[in-house]
Image (spheres, helix red, strand yellow):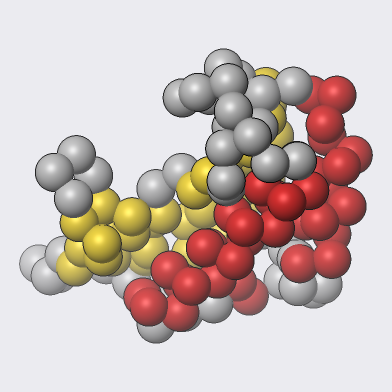
Amino acid sequence: MSDIKRIETGPRMSQAVIANGIVWLAGQVGEPGASVTDQTRVVLEQVDRLLAEAGTDKTRIVSAQIWLADMADFAEMNAVWDQWAPQGHTPARATGEAKLATPDYKVEVIVTAAL
């Protein structure tokens, strides 16, 4: 059996969990009320930071789920994603519209990566 390591564990959730060579990140959100561009940029910086702490990086992401409060923001979010995503290493990805935890959040990203 593999050990389970948790990163930035709080009373409700951990920001990352590592088990069996896989890293699962909690949904990452940006600064409430900021633009879609700024929220996406902050979210992807947080993904980079958490993956580094886990011992991996964005080239090892196998799956990404992106939730937008409004699908009208799809192109704006993708403009940031496309600059960030490592060509030749892009993950399987799904994007959908959802009511997020607060109306001030416009983007939430959840990733799973290999170590």
